[in-house]
Image (cartoon, rainbow, N blue to C red; front, top):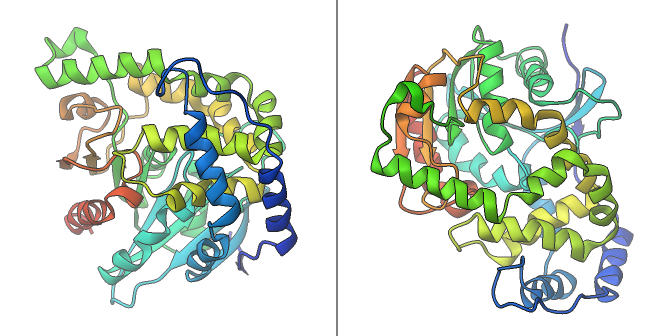
Length: 372
């Protein structure tokens, strides 16, 4: 059954931007932490400076224009509206590629990939996850990574008419792309993951290498120092949502903490505020967090070695310098037995489309050129 695509353009009302500035100017700030640095979270001066720039210097209309430079559509799949950017290449025989973002990212994070990828012979499809950006907010449970993957399959085949395509993604996009490949190998030619989500099964892999031990130690440190956000998203997204949807400064602190600490230090204020502003203007602080409640148990199984649903299609993987987790290739091969491409980079972090787009584009081209 065909899926109807309805043309769409982003146009945030001026009054929403005026109200945002007013709320920022009336922020009630907490006192600074009694300890220096980031030991108790993102520092007060960091958030105040970001919010000052958000109110007085940041230009949402420039971000809006970048979105509107790409053809956009709304499509209803399984009862939910999905927002999607779809750019066709002028190259004959272009290869379709659906790229999925995560949290706290968005299609705005990935929009800069459109021009270089279409120039290299790819049709680029960028859907917004349910509950994120301009997609609809689920009103019933069940919109986890499996249902999203099924929706993407319908979008690509029944909506856009592609019979064979590639999938790629980072963060939640890694999980969605993996499930998509496992459930629809008839149409998915291969997946590129940043990085593949896979952990060790030491009982059958023997002694870890030096780099594997380093990766495990960094994951333990991350679990002790900065994983609480994930548990809050998983267990109480509604409770958290009241603050994220009502306070722009609170939303800025929640998102900026991760964008700064998960990157290699190269993100600009405007790159951070692009994501924060999109979540604020669409009111998706609560709805985006609910994806953790729907999916986190499944993803944890992939990481700790209890995974099912092996991915049999060809797989490429990229690991950027500041990224966590940092799986080894042999860990990844347990769930992804047909790894065709593997790259480890000395720069970039969790947001390579913003931090190192040149490296990410070259990895995507190199991997998919081998299977298209």
